[in-house]
Image 1: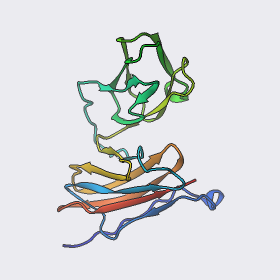
Image 2 (image 1 turned 45 degrees about the vertical axis):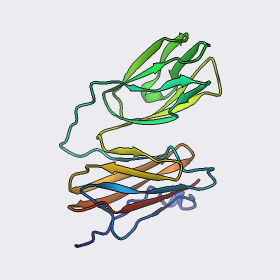
Image 3 (image 1 turned 90 degrees about the vertical axis):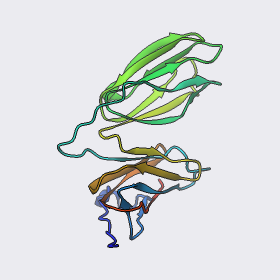
Length: 206
């Protein structure tokens, strides 16, 4: 088997030379069964909720799923705290608490307000604009969440140990982005070849 080295595309120009963010790549990167690896985040209690996703693939478009993705409002929290969706995906926000909730976003590229609604109700929104969308509740200031809207269906959210797997990535060269709410995103260019997956590891930190 021939190993393929990664070309790292740093986000940091001269004015960001002191940013404490690093990318660690194993010599063997990614193969057609998927892109797999681990994310670590400086000064974080655990490594969950990092999103690793492929950037736009020139000439490729993808159909969003017909079914909505759920983000519940339960125990005064958005659950899950972070999701990734393909652009055009509808996200439903059911209220499972015995108090009224609200869902709104101050994000400039996609600001909206679904209003407040009681237990057992649900509101939804279709996310068409790629980017990082912040979710808040104007009834409970402690509630927040994120929707990462991607241009491909190839993405994963890390578990508490930082592990992730993006399955079924076809052979080719791709930009891979690693994002976490507490760190500056990191980008890498990776080549995917036929064969089993191999690790791609990211270190994120402020």
